[in-house]
Length: 297
Image (cartoon, rainbow, N blue to C red; front, side, top):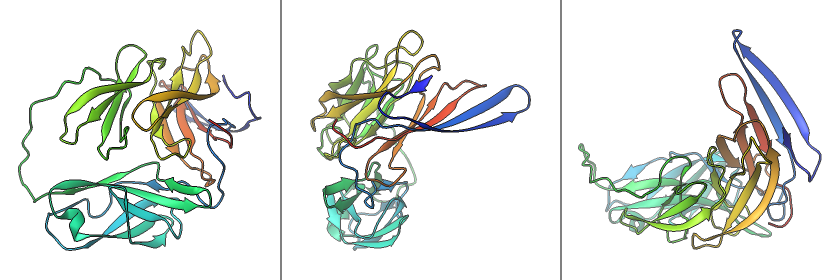
């Protein structure tokens, strides 16, 4: 059962059967979730599909052009290198070309690539990112000692959770708890705050800026899908990897936990939507799009 108490839903279903033993049922659900800020038609949330070109450069080189590929780019979208805007040429809704400065790649580093579109209500930062490695070419790879974090399993997410410019990890900690592991900038991680203590435990999760404040929030299944109402929930990042509960929306009972997540602005209204697979298994699954409607978080 998939439902939302907030608005009526429109369903589009298609069934494909392979042989006699397995069928897949696809469902598209447009449901208001009252999670995000004001809709901004004409200003979709930019979405980067890595890799960018080039993916790596040698340090000490000249300025270079970076080709960024994705979706929902508009004339005026700007490519950022480590959160700093760079001169950008709009090629199409699927490509931006940015001029990266020699100073950006003067020494070994990793450039975090994002895209910002500025609307009348303020900046909209891309829901995904890419990286450009800056180092001398090498033909060998040396592995260091493994680092134990204490977590592991599903979910395993990557994002800058405390806005320090370094990529952190978000993964399963103790039972029903999702924890951030914070990067000190040298690839050393330490346990940080919990993102949630009521994670379903069997499904997955996804990151995205659901309230438009420039920080990475988390969406996840909450509750036991087999014995009670299991709802989707967004917890909102305070900017320092601590989280506060946001809204809950929809519920999935008796179908199994949502196992795969995608986050993006699928209808171009400036508000992130969620795509998830529900049920799974070899004979039955749903693909659902949950549209996040205008409202307060």
